Structures are given as structure tokens and as C-alpha cells.
Image (cartoon, rainbow, N blue to C red; front, side, top):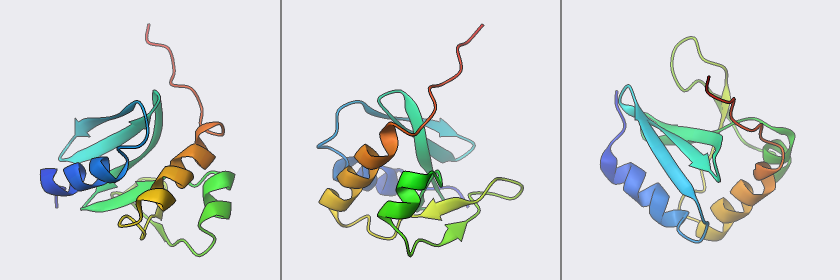
Length: 104
């Protein structure tokens, strides 16, 4: 099942206090970038983030879910209604995320 543009717009609205939030559509889903780094994505109208140490500490009760068949598990973010929580989560994760690979 593909994610809806409405859910994407809702999540982007919740992240509106952050600079440089971008996204890219990919096979009916959306990859979310924060200041150029992939932080997670929207899969089947669920916000999933990379399971880096800072994210696990920020949401210790998070459930691991697969974004799609054959992918690595990611953390399900349940508190998408809490704008401050999302902003804090993305800020906590940023330094730990790898820089994107340079294109040849």
C-alpha cells in the first residue's frame, strides 16, 4: 500500500520548525531528509526512522517495523501528533546519521 500525500503533508507540517526538511518520492513511499541526511521515511502511512543509538534512547519503547519486504528494520514513531517530540527526535539523531555518499 502506498503512502498518501495527505499523511506526508501532515508530517512535514509537524516538522515545520526545522530547517531543510526535504523528501523524495520513491515507489509510492517517501524518503525524509534532514539537512541533507536520510533520517527515515513514510511507509504505508507510518513514520519510520533509522534505528541509530540516539533514536533508540529518545524513544526507548519504540517498536521495530519493516518499511517494506526485504528491508532493514526501522523504528516506528507513534508520536507524530507531538510537534516538539518530533523536532527533538530529529535534532537528537542528526549528528549520528551518515552523510550521503557522493555521486560520481
